[in-house]
Image (cartoon, rainbow, N blue to C red; front, side, top):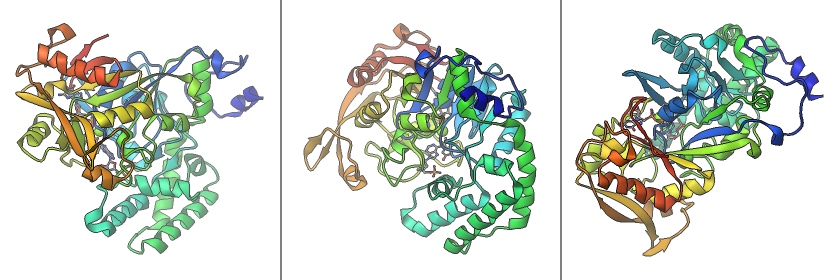
Length: 453
Ligand code: 2SA
Ligand code: GDP
Ligand code: MG
Protein backbone atom coordinates (compact mmCIF):
# COMPACT_ATOMS: atom_id res chain seq x y z
CA UNK A 1 0.00 0.00 0.00
CA UNK A 2 0.97 3.60 -0.38
CA UNK A 3 1.23 3.98 3.38
CA UNK A 4 3.63 1.09 3.49
CA UNK A 5 5.77 2.72 0.85
CA UNK A 6 5.76 6.02 2.65
CA UNK A 7 6.80 4.42 5.93
CA UNK A 8 9.68 2.70 4.18
CA UNK A 9 11.16 5.99 3.08
CA UNK A 10 14.03 6.98 5.22
CA UNK A 11 13.10 10.49 6.32
CA UNK A 12 16.14 11.55 8.21
CA UNK A 13 15.23 15.04 9.27
CA UNK A 14 12.34 17.35 9.83
CA UNK A 15 8.74 16.63 10.56
CA UNK A 16 7.16 13.80 8.63
CA UNK A 17 4.22 15.21 6.73
CA UNK A 18 1.91 12.33 6.07
CA UNK A 19 -1.53 11.14 6.72
CA UNK A 20 -1.78 7.57 7.90
CA UNK A 21 -5.43 7.21 6.93
CA UNK A 22 -4.86 7.93 3.29
CA UNK A 23 -8.15 9.43 2.21
CA UNK A 24 -8.40 8.80 -1.48
CA UNK A 25 -7.52 10.77 -4.53
CA UNK A 26 -5.97 14.15 -5.18
CA UNK A 27 -9.49 15.60 -5.43
CA UNK A 28 -9.69 15.42 -1.67
CA UNK A 29 -6.56 17.50 -1.11
CA UNK A 30 -7.12 20.49 1.06
CA UNK A 31 -4.61 22.73 -0.72
CA UNK A 32 -3.88 23.87 -4.23
CA UNK A 33 -0.44 24.69 -5.53
CA UNK A 34 0.41 28.29 -6.41
CA UNK A 35 2.81 28.66 -9.32
CA UNK A 36 5.08 31.56 -10.35
CA UNK A 37 6.31 31.48 -13.97
CA UNK A 38 8.41 33.75 -16.16
CA UNK A 39 6.30 35.06 -19.04
CA UNK A 40 9.06 36.41 -21.30
CA UNK A 41 12.78 35.54 -21.66
CA UNK A 42 13.54 35.42 -17.94
CA UNK A 43 14.62 37.92 -15.30
CA UNK A 44 11.12 39.32 -14.96
CA UNK A 45 11.54 39.48 -11.19
CA UNK A 46 10.31 36.02 -10.22
CA UNK A 47 12.55 35.97 -7.16
CA UNK A 48 10.89 39.07 -5.77
CA UNK A 49 7.40 37.70 -6.44
CA UNK A 50 8.26 34.38 -4.80
CA UNK A 51 9.62 36.24 -1.79
CA UNK A 52 6.38 38.21 -1.52
CA UNK A 53 4.24 35.06 -1.68
CA UNK A 54 6.47 32.80 0.37
CA UNK A 55 5.37 34.51 3.56
CA UNK A 56 2.21 32.43 3.28
CA UNK A 57 3.85 29.27 1.97
CA UNK A 58 4.77 26.21 4.00
CA UNK A 59 6.81 24.82 1.11
CA UNK A 60 8.58 26.52 -1.82
CA UNK A 61 9.77 24.32 -4.70
CA UNK A 62 12.02 24.52 -7.72
CA UNK A 63 10.91 22.13 -10.45
CA UNK A 64 13.30 22.63 -13.37
CA UNK A 65 16.53 24.24 -14.52
CA UNK A 66 19.63 24.44 -12.40
CA UNK A 67 22.05 27.09 -11.27
CA UNK A 68 21.77 28.86 -14.62
CA UNK A 69 18.89 30.71 -12.93
CA UNK A 70 19.54 33.91 -11.02
CA UNK A 71 16.72 35.11 -8.80
CA UNK A 72 17.12 38.30 -6.79
CA UNK A 73 15.42 39.17 -3.52
CA UNK A 74 16.03 42.47 -1.75
CA UNK A 75 15.14 42.63 1.94
CA UNK A 76 15.84 45.79 3.98
CA UNK A 77 18.27 46.94 1.30
CA UNK A 78 20.20 43.66 1.47
CA UNK A 79 20.40 41.81 -1.84
CA UNK A 80 20.26 38.01 -2.05
CA UNK A 81 20.77 36.08 -5.28
CA UNK A 82 19.54 32.52 -5.60
CA UNK A 83 20.53 30.06 -8.29
CA UNK A 84 19.65 26.53 -7.23
CA UNK A 85 17.98 27.28 -3.94
CA UNK A 86 14.34 28.34 -4.03
CA UNK A 87 14.14 32.05 -3.14
CA UNK A 88 11.71 31.04 -0.41
CA UNK A 89 14.64 29.71 1.63
CA UNK A 90 15.04 33.12 3.25
CA UNK A 91 11.62 32.76 4.78
CA UNK A 92 12.46 30.92 7.98
CA UNK A 93 9.02 29.39 8.23
CA UNK A 94 9.10 27.57 4.91
CA UNK A 95 10.59 24.33 3.66
CA UNK A 96 12.49 24.48 0.36
CA UNK A 97 12.33 21.64 -2.13
CA UNK A 98 14.64 21.01 -5.07
CA UNK A 99 12.43 18.75 -7.17
CA UNK A 100 13.17 15.81 -9.44
CA UNK A 101 13.11 17.99 -12.57
CA UNK A 102 15.99 20.16 -11.39
CA UNK A 103 19.60 19.44 -12.39
CA UNK A 104 21.87 19.89 -9.40
CA UNK A 105 25.54 20.91 -9.39
CA UNK A 106 26.54 19.95 -5.86
CA UNK A 107 29.64 22.18 -5.60
CA UNK A 108 27.40 25.07 -6.69
CA UNK A 109 24.69 24.14 -4.20
CA UNK A 110 27.04 24.04 -1.20
CA UNK A 111 28.78 27.23 -2.29
CA UNK A 112 25.43 28.96 -2.55
CA UNK A 113 24.44 27.76 0.91
CA UNK A 114 27.72 28.98 2.41
CA UNK A 115 27.45 32.35 0.69
CA UNK A 116 23.93 32.89 1.96
CA UNK A 117 24.80 31.67 5.43
CA UNK A 118 27.42 34.41 5.54
CA UNK A 119 24.66 36.87 4.63
CA UNK A 120 22.46 35.71 7.48
CA UNK A 121 20.54 32.71 6.15
CA UNK A 122 19.92 30.41 9.09
CA UNK A 123 18.47 27.03 9.93
CA UNK A 124 18.52 25.90 6.29
CA UNK A 125 19.64 22.46 7.54
CA UNK A 126 16.12 21.85 8.80
CA UNK A 127 14.41 23.36 5.80
CA UNK A 128 16.08 22.05 2.66
CA UNK A 129 14.97 18.91 0.83
CA UNK A 130 16.51 17.58 -2.38
CA UNK A 131 14.80 14.97 -4.54
CA UNK A 132 16.49 11.59 -4.83
CA UNK A 133 15.47 11.66 -8.52
CA UNK A 134 17.14 14.95 -9.43
CA UNK A 135 19.99 14.56 -11.91
CA UNK A 136 23.50 15.68 -11.10
CA UNK A 137 25.44 18.26 -13.08
CA UNK A 138 29.15 17.49 -12.95
CA UNK A 139 32.04 19.82 -13.66
CA UNK A 140 32.66 17.96 -16.92
CA UNK A 141 29.11 18.88 -18.02
CA UNK A 142 30.06 22.52 -17.50
CA UNK A 143 33.29 22.05 -19.46
CA UNK A 144 31.34 20.42 -22.29
CA UNK A 145 28.85 23.30 -22.24
CA UNK A 146 31.77 25.68 -22.87
CA UNK A 147 33.32 23.44 -25.53
CA UNK A 148 29.99 23.10 -27.39
CA UNK A 149 29.54 26.86 -27.35
CA UNK A 150 33.08 27.38 -28.64
CA UNK A 151 32.50 24.84 -31.43
CA UNK A 152 29.47 26.78 -32.60
CA UNK A 153 31.63 29.84 -33.10
CA UNK A 154 29.50 32.80 -34.23
CA UNK A 155 26.34 30.70 -33.88
CA UNK A 156 26.68 30.04 -30.17
CA UNK A 157 23.53 30.12 -28.04
CA UNK A 158 24.92 32.29 -25.30
CA UNK A 159 24.39 29.72 -22.56
CA UNK A 160 25.37 30.39 -18.97
CA UNK A 161 27.95 27.54 -19.26
CA UNK A 162 26.56 25.98 -16.10
CA UNK A 163 26.33 22.57 -17.79
CA UNK A 164 22.55 22.63 -18.05
CA UNK A 165 22.23 21.41 -21.65
CA UNK A 166 24.81 18.61 -21.28
CA UNK A 167 23.24 17.42 -17.99
CA UNK A 168 19.73 17.25 -19.47
CA UNK A 169 21.29 15.50 -22.50
CA UNK A 170 22.72 12.85 -20.18
CA UNK A 171 19.28 12.50 -18.61
CA UNK A 172 17.57 12.11 -21.99
CA UNK A 173 20.11 9.58 -23.29
CA UNK A 174 19.66 7.64 -20.03
CA UNK A 175 23.28 7.98 -19.04
CA UNK A 176 22.56 10.53 -16.35
CA UNK A 177 23.42 10.07 -12.69
CA UNK A 178 20.84 10.95 -10.09
CA UNK A 179 21.11 12.07 -6.49
CA UNK A 180 19.82 8.63 -5.46
CA UNK A 181 22.68 6.96 -7.37
CA UNK A 182 25.23 9.01 -5.47
CA UNK A 183 23.71 8.03 -2.14
CA UNK A 184 23.43 4.35 -3.06
CA UNK A 185 26.24 1.84 -3.54
CA UNK A 186 29.36 3.93 -4.17
CA UNK A 187 30.97 1.30 -6.42
CA UNK A 188 27.98 1.35 -8.72
CA UNK A 189 28.08 5.14 -8.73
CA UNK A 190 31.82 5.04 -9.54
CA UNK A 191 31.25 2.70 -12.49
CA UNK A 192 28.53 4.94 -13.85
CA UNK A 193 30.70 7.99 -13.37
CA UNK A 194 33.70 6.42 -15.18
CA UNK A 195 31.46 5.39 -18.04
CA UNK A 196 29.74 8.79 -18.45
CA UNK A 197 33.12 10.54 -18.37
CA UNK A 198 34.50 8.17 -21.03
CA UNK A 199 31.47 8.84 -23.26
CA UNK A 200 31.99 12.60 -22.99
CA UNK A 201 35.73 12.34 -23.59
CA UNK A 202 35.11 10.34 -26.78
CA UNK A 203 32.97 13.20 -28.06
CA UNK A 204 35.06 16.00 -26.57
CA UNK A 205 38.72 14.97 -26.35
CA UNK A 206 39.45 18.39 -24.87
CA UNK A 207 37.40 17.54 -21.78
CA UNK A 208 39.84 16.95 -18.92
CA UNK A 209 38.64 15.00 -15.87
CA UNK A 210 40.71 13.65 -13.00
CA UNK A 211 38.35 10.76 -12.34
CA UNK A 212 39.88 9.55 -9.08
CA UNK A 213 39.93 12.95 -7.47
CA UNK A 214 36.36 13.61 -8.65
CA UNK A 215 35.25 10.33 -7.10
CA UNK A 216 36.81 11.09 -3.76
CA UNK A 217 35.29 14.56 -3.85
CA UNK A 218 31.88 13.05 -4.58
CA UNK A 219 32.24 10.49 -1.78
CA UNK A 220 32.38 13.52 0.51
CA UNK A 221 29.49 15.29 -1.21
CA UNK A 222 27.39 12.14 -0.77
CA UNK A 223 27.69 12.35 3.01
CA UNK A 224 27.21 16.10 3.04
CA UNK A 225 24.03 15.80 0.99
CA UNK A 226 22.54 12.66 2.53
CA UNK A 227 20.60 14.37 5.37
CA UNK A 228 18.64 16.50 2.91
CA UNK A 229 17.55 13.87 0.41
CA UNK A 230 13.99 12.60 0.35
CA UNK A 231 11.36 11.25 -1.98
CA UNK A 232 9.92 14.70 -2.69
CA UNK A 233 6.94 13.33 -4.59
CA UNK A 234 5.49 11.49 -1.61
CA UNK A 235 6.52 14.31 0.69
CA UNK A 236 4.67 16.92 -1.39
CA UNK A 237 1.55 14.84 -1.78
CA UNK A 238 1.30 14.19 1.94
CA UNK A 239 1.86 17.87 2.58
CA UNK A 240 -0.96 18.84 0.23
CA UNK A 241 -3.27 16.23 1.70
CA UNK A 242 -2.57 17.78 5.08
CA UNK A 243 -3.45 21.30 4.00
CA UNK A 244 0.06 22.71 3.65
CA UNK A 245 0.46 25.60 1.21
CA UNK A 246 2.85 24.96 -1.64
CA UNK A 247 4.44 27.54 -3.92
CA UNK A 248 6.40 26.66 -7.07
CA UNK A 249 9.15 28.94 -8.32
CA UNK A 250 9.61 28.61 -12.07
CA UNK A 251 13.11 29.32 -13.35
CA UNK A 252 14.05 30.79 -16.74
CA UNK A 253 10.85 31.50 -18.70
CA UNK A 254 8.35 30.39 -21.32
CA UNK A 255 10.29 31.85 -24.26
CA UNK A 256 13.31 29.81 -23.12
CA UNK A 257 11.22 26.61 -22.83
CA UNK A 258 12.74 23.79 -24.85
CA UNK A 259 9.40 23.13 -26.59
CA UNK A 260 7.70 26.51 -26.70
CA UNK A 261 10.65 28.90 -26.77
CA UNK A 262 12.72 30.21 -29.65
CA UNK A 263 14.41 26.86 -30.30
CA UNK A 264 17.41 26.33 -30.43
CA UNK A 265 17.97 29.57 -28.52
CA UNK A 266 16.39 28.12 -25.40
CA UNK A 267 17.41 26.36 -22.23
CA UNK A 268 17.07 22.59 -21.91
CA UNK A 269 14.07 22.28 -19.62
CA UNK A 270 10.35 22.95 -19.81
CA UNK A 271 10.08 26.31 -18.07
CA UNK A 272 6.34 26.55 -18.60
CA UNK A 273 3.49 24.92 -16.69
CA UNK A 274 4.25 21.38 -17.93
CA UNK A 275 7.62 21.47 -16.18
CA UNK A 276 5.87 22.10 -12.88
CA UNK A 277 3.95 18.84 -13.19
CA UNK A 278 6.82 16.67 -14.43
CA UNK A 279 9.42 18.36 -12.28
CA UNK A 280 7.61 17.67 -9.02
CA UNK A 281 5.24 14.79 -9.73
CA UNK A 282 2.09 16.86 -9.42
CA UNK A 283 -1.14 16.22 -11.34
CA UNK A 284 -2.94 19.15 -13.08
CA UNK A 285 -5.82 18.90 -10.61
CA UNK A 286 -3.74 20.27 -7.76
CA UNK A 287 -2.62 23.40 -9.60
CA UNK A 288 -4.34 26.53 -8.32
CA UNK A 289 -3.19 30.03 -9.17
CA UNK A 290 -0.68 30.39 -12.05
CA UNK A 291 1.03 33.76 -11.77
CA UNK A 292 2.78 35.06 -14.87
CA UNK A 293 5.58 37.47 -14.05
CA UNK A 294 5.81 40.12 -16.78
CA UNK A 295 8.46 42.81 -16.92
CA UNK A 296 7.01 46.14 -18.09
CA UNK A 297 9.41 45.98 -21.05
CA UNK A 298 11.34 43.05 -22.54
CA UNK A 299 14.85 41.76 -21.92
CA UNK A 300 16.82 38.81 -23.17
CA UNK A 301 20.26 37.61 -22.15
CA UNK A 302 22.01 35.29 -24.56
CA UNK A 303 21.56 35.01 -28.30
CA UNK A 304 18.48 34.45 -30.43
CA UNK A 305 15.70 36.44 -32.07
CA UNK A 306 14.16 39.35 -30.17
CA UNK A 307 11.59 41.21 -32.31
CA UNK A 308 11.10 44.30 -30.12
CA UNK A 309 14.80 44.76 -29.30
CA UNK A 310 16.05 48.36 -29.14
CA UNK A 311 19.61 48.82 -30.28
CA UNK A 312 19.55 52.54 -29.56
CA UNK A 313 19.59 55.09 -26.74
CA UNK A 314 16.28 53.88 -25.35
CA UNK A 315 17.59 50.30 -25.22
CA UNK A 316 20.67 51.60 -23.39
CA UNK A 317 18.52 53.59 -21.01
CA UNK A 318 16.41 50.54 -20.12
CA UNK A 319 19.60 48.53 -19.63
CA UNK A 320 21.18 51.04 -17.26
CA UNK A 321 18.08 52.25 -15.41
CA UNK A 322 16.83 48.68 -15.11
CA UNK A 323 20.23 47.38 -13.94
CA UNK A 324 19.81 44.72 -16.61
CA UNK A 325 22.84 42.56 -15.92
CA UNK A 326 22.83 38.75 -15.69
CA UNK A 327 22.71 37.60 -12.08
CA UNK A 328 24.67 34.44 -12.90
CA UNK A 329 27.03 35.53 -15.69
CA UNK A 330 27.13 39.33 -15.28
CA UNK A 331 26.39 39.73 -18.99
CA UNK A 332 24.51 42.83 -20.14
CA UNK A 333 20.91 42.00 -21.00
CA UNK A 334 19.47 43.10 -24.34
CA UNK A 335 16.44 45.39 -23.89
CA UNK A 336 13.36 46.30 -25.89
CA UNK A 337 9.70 47.29 -25.76
CA UNK A 338 6.99 45.12 -24.27
CA UNK A 339 5.95 42.44 -26.76
CA UNK A 340 2.26 41.49 -26.58
CA UNK A 341 2.43 38.66 -29.16
CA UNK A 342 4.97 36.99 -26.83
CA UNK A 343 2.72 37.48 -23.83
CA UNK A 344 -0.44 36.29 -25.60
CA UNK A 345 1.44 33.16 -26.64
CA UNK A 346 2.90 32.33 -23.23
CA UNK A 347 -0.45 33.12 -21.63
CA UNK A 348 -2.03 30.46 -23.87
CA UNK A 349 0.59 27.89 -22.94
CA UNK A 350 0.70 28.64 -19.21
CA UNK A 351 -2.89 29.74 -18.55
CA UNK A 352 -2.08 32.63 -16.21
CA UNK A 353 -4.78 33.33 -13.68
CA UNK A 354 -2.99 36.51 -12.57
CA UNK A 355 -0.10 38.66 -13.65
CA UNK A 356 2.52 40.51 -11.66
CA UNK A 357 3.82 43.39 -13.77
CA UNK A 358 7.32 44.27 -12.59
CA UNK A 359 9.73 47.18 -13.07
CA UNK A 360 7.11 49.72 -14.09
CA UNK A 361 9.31 52.32 -12.34
CA UNK A 362 12.06 51.81 -14.92
CA UNK A 363 9.78 53.46 -17.52
CA UNK A 364 9.29 56.59 -15.35
CA UNK A 365 11.63 58.81 -17.40
CA UNK A 366 10.34 58.03 -20.90
CA UNK A 367 8.21 60.72 -22.61
CA UNK A 368 6.46 58.07 -24.70
CA UNK A 369 6.36 54.31 -24.52
CA UNK A 370 5.75 51.78 -27.27
CA UNK A 371 4.12 48.38 -27.00
CA UNK A 372 4.47 45.76 -29.74
CA UNK A 373 0.91 44.72 -30.56
CA UNK A 374 1.16 42.53 -33.67
CA UNK A 375 3.64 40.73 -35.87
CA UNK A 376 3.54 40.95 -39.65
CA UNK A 377 5.26 38.37 -41.81
CA UNK A 378 5.51 39.07 -45.55
CA UNK A 379 3.20 42.06 -44.98
CA UNK A 380 0.43 40.00 -43.41
CA UNK A 381 -0.53 40.08 -39.76
CA UNK A 382 0.02 36.68 -38.18
CA UNK A 383 -2.02 35.39 -35.28
CA UNK A 384 0.08 32.48 -34.13
CA UNK A 385 3.58 32.71 -32.70
CA UNK A 386 6.12 31.65 -35.36
CA UNK A 387 7.66 28.27 -34.64
CA UNK A 388 10.66 28.97 -36.83
CA UNK A 389 13.35 31.35 -35.72
CA UNK A 390 13.98 32.44 -39.29
CA UNK A 391 10.34 33.60 -39.52
CA UNK A 392 10.69 35.24 -36.13
CA UNK A 393 13.84 37.01 -37.28
CA UNK A 394 11.85 38.44 -40.20
CA UNK A 395 8.67 39.60 -38.48
CA UNK A 396 7.86 43.26 -38.58
CA UNK A 397 6.43 44.48 -35.31
CA UNK A 398 3.44 46.84 -35.28
CA UNK A 399 3.52 49.21 -32.32
CA UNK A 400 1.14 51.41 -30.44
CA UNK A 401 2.64 54.49 -28.75
CA UNK A 402 1.35 55.50 -25.35
CA UNK A 403 2.25 58.70 -23.48
CA UNK A 404 4.77 58.35 -20.68
CA UNK A 405 4.20 59.82 -17.20
CA UNK A 406 7.56 61.49 -16.50
CA UNK A 407 7.34 61.19 -12.73
CA UNK A 408 8.56 58.76 -10.17
CA UNK A 409 6.34 55.80 -9.29
CA UNK A 410 8.84 54.40 -6.78
CA UNK A 411 6.86 55.41 -3.70
CA UNK A 412 3.40 54.59 -4.97
CA UNK A 413 1.64 51.81 -3.05
CA UNK A 414 -1.94 52.26 -4.27
CA UNK A 415 -2.98 51.86 -7.90
CA UNK A 416 -5.08 55.04 -7.75
CA UNK A 417 -1.97 57.04 -6.84
CA UNK A 418 -0.18 56.06 -10.05
CA UNK A 419 -0.04 58.81 -12.69
CA UNK A 420 -2.94 58.43 -15.13
CA UNK A 421 -0.62 57.55 -18.02
CA UNK A 422 0.92 54.75 -15.93
CA UNK A 423 -2.56 53.46 -15.04
CA UNK A 424 -3.40 53.49 -18.74
CA UNK A 425 -0.24 51.58 -19.63
CA UNK A 426 -1.15 48.87 -17.12
CA UNK A 427 -4.80 48.74 -18.18
CA UNK A 428 -3.82 48.48 -21.85
CA UNK A 429 -1.80 45.32 -21.15
CA UNK A 430 -4.43 43.85 -18.85
CA UNK A 431 -7.21 44.39 -21.36
CA UNK A 432 -5.24 42.85 -24.20
CA UNK A 433 -4.26 39.74 -22.24
CA UNK A 434 -7.56 39.47 -20.43
CA UNK A 435 -5.76 38.43 -17.24
CA UNK A 436 -5.92 40.52 -14.05
CA UNK A 437 -2.72 42.37 -13.22
CA UNK A 438 -2.83 41.69 -9.53
CA UNK A 439 0.46 43.29 -8.50
CA UNK A 440 2.74 45.99 -9.92
CA UNK A 441 6.42 46.26 -9.03
CA UNK A 442 7.85 49.75 -8.61
CA UNK A 443 11.26 49.01 -7.10
CA UNK A 444 13.66 46.28 -6.07
CA UNK A 445 12.74 46.06 -2.42
CA UNK A 446 10.23 43.71 -0.85
CA UNK A 447 8.06 46.73 0.02
CA UNK A 448 8.02 48.21 -3.50
CA UNK A 449 4.85 46.61 -4.71
CA UNK A 450 1.32 47.78 -5.48
CA UNK A 451 -1.39 45.26 -4.74
CA UNK A 452 -4.09 46.08 -7.29
CA UNK A 453 -6.70 43.45 -6.46
P1 2SA B 1 21.52 27.61 -20.43
O1 2SA B 1 22.71 28.02 -19.63
O2 2SA B 1 21.78 26.38 -21.25
O3 2SA B 1 20.26 27.51 -19.67
O4 2SA B 1 21.35 28.80 -21.52
C1 2SA B 1 20.42 28.69 -22.58
C2 2SA B 1 19.69 30.00 -22.80
O5 2SA B 1 18.89 30.29 -21.65
C3 2SA B 1 19.21 31.56 -21.17
N1 2SA B 1 19.15 31.61 -19.70
C4 2SA B 1 18.72 32.67 -19.02
N2 2SA B 1 18.08 33.78 -19.43
C5 2SA B 1 17.81 34.69 -18.47
N3 2SA B 1 18.21 34.58 -17.16
C6 2SA B 1 18.86 33.49 -16.75
N4 2SA B 1 19.48 33.48 -15.54
C7 2SA B 1 20.59 34.44 -15.30
C8 2SA B 1 20.04 35.76 -14.75
C9 2SA B 1 21.36 34.63 -16.61
C10 2SA B 1 22.72 35.29 -16.54
O6 2SA B 1 19.20 35.70 -13.87
O7 2SA B 1 20.44 36.84 -15.18
O8 2SA B 1 23.27 35.60 -15.51
O9 2SA B 1 23.28 35.47 -17.65
C11 2SA B 1 19.08 32.45 -17.68
N5 2SA B 1 19.63 31.22 -17.58
C12 2SA B 1 19.67 30.71 -18.84
C13 2SA B 1 20.65 31.80 -21.61
O10 2SA B 1 21.01 33.16 -21.60
C14 2SA B 1 20.63 31.19 -23.00
O11 2SA B 1 20.03 32.10 -23.89
P1 GDP C 1 14.24 36.60 -11.94
O1 GDP C 1 15.29 35.77 -12.60
O2 GDP C 1 12.96 36.58 -12.68
O3 GDP C 1 14.06 36.30 -10.49
O4 GDP C 1 14.77 38.12 -12.02
P2 GDP C 1 16.26 38.64 -11.73
O5 GDP C 1 16.50 38.67 -10.28
O6 GDP C 1 17.23 37.93 -12.60
O7 GDP C 1 16.17 40.10 -12.34
C1 GDP C 1 15.20 41.02 -11.90
C2 GDP C 1 15.91 42.27 -11.38
O8 GDP C 1 14.97 43.31 -11.25
C3 GDP C 1 16.51 42.09 -10.01
O9 GDP C 1 17.64 42.91 -9.93
C4 GDP C 1 15.42 42.60 -9.08
O10 GDP C 1 15.93 43.09 -7.85
C5 GDP C 1 14.85 43.71 -9.89
N1 GDP C 1 13.41 43.98 -9.69
C6 GDP C 1 12.40 43.11 -9.51
N2 GDP C 1 11.21 43.76 -9.49
C7 GDP C 1 11.49 45.07 -9.66
C8 GDP C 1 10.69 46.24 -9.78
O11 GDP C 1 9.47 46.21 -9.72
N3 GDP C 1 11.36 47.42 -9.98
C9 GDP C 1 12.72 47.50 -10.07
N4 GDP C 1 13.28 48.68 -10.27
N5 GDP C 1 13.50 46.40 -9.97
C10 GDP C 1 12.89 45.22 -9.79
MG1 MG D 1 17.21 35.92 -13.38
